[in-house]
Image 1 (cartoon, rainbow, N blue to C red):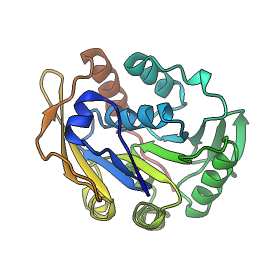
Image 2 (image 1 turned 180 degrees about the horizontal axis):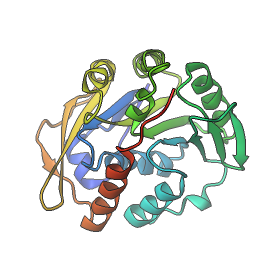
Image 3 (image 1 turned 90 degrees about the vertical axis):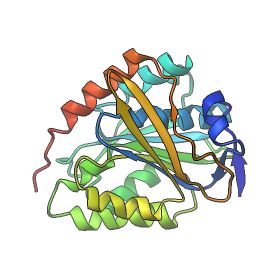
Length: 246
């Protein structure tokens, strides 16, 4: 195991030693509180350190909004990292996991066996790096809306977050729906953080738990542009209306 510093000033103040690699990080909080933007702080640091990425942005229809946010926040053009990032596009009606673009798979991730297949295929699309892949995903609670697979996919997510140390994971989850189920994931994550929003558009972060590194428990306001926060909030409000069918 090693430690990776983010080299982002405000985050390094909270995490002077960085994060343990590998480990699992869960960023939790009510819907519309900017969790994916905090997640992308770690994504940017991982990429700059030479790691590869598997993105599962469930609340976005494609990876384009991830690319937009990375460009606006960090001046990182993900198009320049071919072979370093693969996306898994969630489709609850997909019959199988299939490659639809050079860097993108489409899969019905509510089925645990498809989750495993998609992650494996995505990893095989990436260049080998010393750090290995970081798997990042937002709005994981969307996978819980389908009754037929709710318990099985919750157990799969719990297993991944708690036990899989072959990769580093950073996930964002909303507590606005299925708060009890999300608490199951909070309890097993190596690293746990919470976000909240104050009006008009002010984002705050507090670290609750970190594995084997020093951290500050002080709640801080995150210096992310108001325009980006508003954009993410609009997307979150729209996607909370999604309800998956059986």
